[in-house]
Image: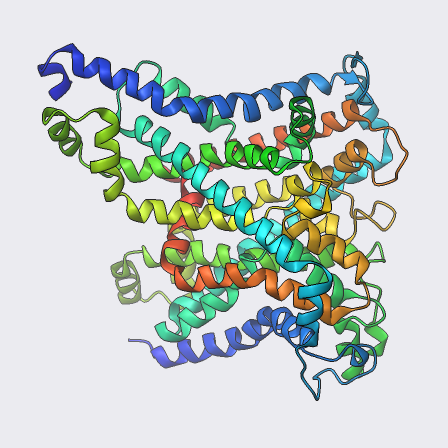
Length: 274
Length: 305
């Protein structure tokens, strides 16, 4: 046999500096958010004294709680909406038998990869004609409709792993299709639901283009567009700016760390199924 | 078919009704906010329209204008170059890091995977703002670090120079995408039968030969997937460039997404939106993305054979 130690040491030797490079921007972000404003320009690269004042600045002066709350509630409603639509239709495409099922499914599939950069003009015009421009309701409609087909696709894969006999037995017992779906099927698909929830949470929380385009009223903006405008306003107050970035990342990192397994599974499934 | 058939039609009928009812909400949203916009953009791309009154039908004028517009040609070129380079770098680095993570001690591997993955879960806005500060010409960390280690000569206005702006963007995109690429490759590596390596070792194949003749061919489907995802992400690139450079300096980093956005929603106030012309770029983006998906299906099918 070959010497396993040689390979392992070599891998460590290469990966260690690489990981330092990859982690550097975040480390630097944290350090900058904790340093004093007057040491940004000429202070040492590693600050001598750490202070939390930048977090207080970011929290109060840019109305961070307001935008944070906007992000939380826009993301929550989107996740719930997508979940309802995607589980219902994913189940129908996986397990129910109805005419044109495959045709409709292929139709939904073919447009799955259309990016929002390509659709932003008609979507903007459409919201405008419905009078939903500059409203969070309009943004929610776009988020849910844009994400539901993909989530449906993920959920369908999960429903397909359930045995048909289970559903047929429930039918013989006389349950309506909706009851079967709610009582028998949904409880069995928890891992799938967790995956969709995490995936959707992340993509909605991080969405920028649509939110930045259809919302103009500053008070209704979620975090991402606000962080973008902050860059202009706080171009020299780097501690406050990086403190804002750090705070905006906290929920994402918490969800990632706590639900790493489903998270990775979801991302993989999404990629592979594409 | 199965039980439904044996028990007669009522069950099948209720299934049919339930089927349509279950897909109806998704389908209505899909028609209104996915399919209709696609068709509407295609129509708008054949018109000239400033947003008021009725769009004026101009046939393929927008597309021929694109061919003569130096900014449009630049945007298409930059999109293709950025996409190609980013995809190549991601695929290469992703495979290398996955192989290394696969041979390292499993516990260390978990830590490495997490470190590489975290940049991919923060938003593009966060990573773009962060890197913009790092690249800042006056007080940016990159220039300060170069100064600190005595390489003042390499200090540079990274995002303001048309020679360095594209590599600077590639770095940010690779930084964000590497963890995911590595992870897909890692999963692919784990699914290779270890007996293959043992058999090859018995036949006297060295590590490099094993890599070339077992690892690389076994990962063909995974590579196809990574390449096509890289193409898709490249063709729709917007956030990072919009936030870091806005397409500048002087259109040096302009891509299809940023150009169509400035045409439609105007970075300069007072200009009339060119919704028809901008829509033509939407159509080009959609065609490129469709090609990327077709390429993936083709690669997967070929690898399956």
